[in-house]
Image 1 (spheres, helix red, strand yellow):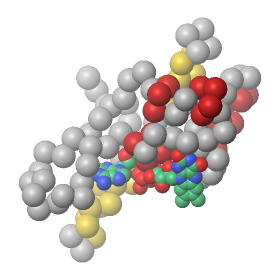
Image 2 (tube, rainbow, N blue to C red):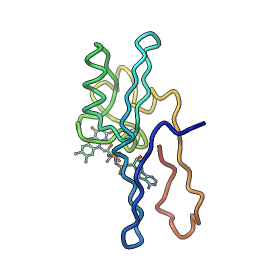
Image 3 (tube, protein in one colour):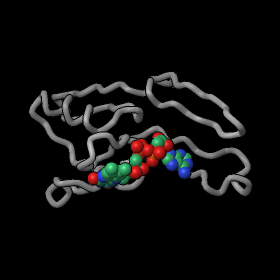
Length: 112
Ligand SMILES: Cc1cc2nc3c(=O)[nH]c(=O)nc-3n(C[C@H](O)[C@H](O)[C@H](O)COP(=O)(O)OP(=O)(O)OC[C@H]3O[C@@H](n4cnc5c(N)ncnc54)[C@H](O)[C@@H]3O)c2cc1C
């Protein structure tokens, strides 16, 4: 399957920086009440887009948190008691696995 997005990789002083800014698509399907969202979005933008269609999504209270990290951590917010965590409402995701030497980079996990 072709990736939906392109992203920018940059290596600075042996650190690899992955700029997620171009992973910014949001596609909402009203009929199925589902959305495809790029991990480069902050939840503020996602809240705005779903709210325009009079929907809601249970996510965090800080508008500038990225959806990728938020979902990896579960996603706690005001709608959790009724609708669960953000991660409870994920139907599918593209997961990036670490295929490099994990012993040398133990801080690297899988990523959404
Ligand atoms: C001001 C503030 C308010 C917050 N409020 C809430 C809240 O209301 N509710 C809540 O649930 N959380 C909250 N958080 C926590 C927030 O969800 C986490 O800090 C989350 O990790 C932020 O995600 P991110 O996508 O912005 O950045 P990152 O966590 O840096 O993630 C960026 C990308 O890197 C990937 N990634 C991250 N770590 C790794 C790793 N070790 N290995 C491989 N890939 C990795 C992620 O999958 C993601 O694609 C808050 C944080 C802040 C700073």
